[in-house]
Amino acid sequence: MRTGYFYSLIFSLLTSASIAAVAAPAATPELAKASVSVDVSAASQSAKVDLNDADATTLQKELSGIGEAKAKAIVAYRETNGPFASVDELLEVKGIGKAILDRNREKLEVN
Image 1 (cartoon, one colour):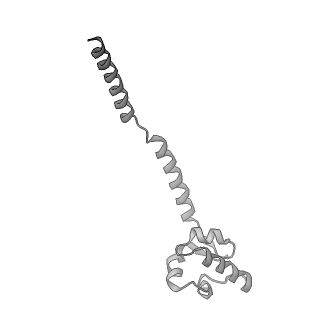
Image 2 (cartoon, rainbow, N blue to C red):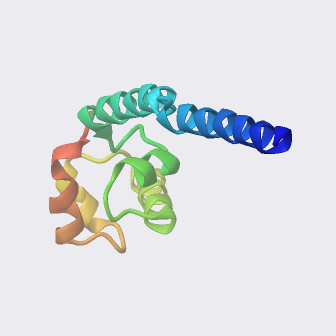
């Protein structure tokens, strides 16, 4: 009889501990991290990319449809032909077409 009472007591203790663990708000720290990353990405999206100053990594990260090879091609074109005079001159870079330019036109600038 004492063992049955002891097992019942242990069972109720473990059950209440597991309910408390399940009901605890564990997602609060993750929400804080998520909002910080959203703020950072929103800030980076609002800034325009200067074709004459950006390095290959920045071009690859900020522009849609631009991978490592196209980003390096943009930088190589700029080093060979001098600074870009306009955003439309990006069409002269091998691998950059009208669709990619139109997709990224709002993000680009030339200073």
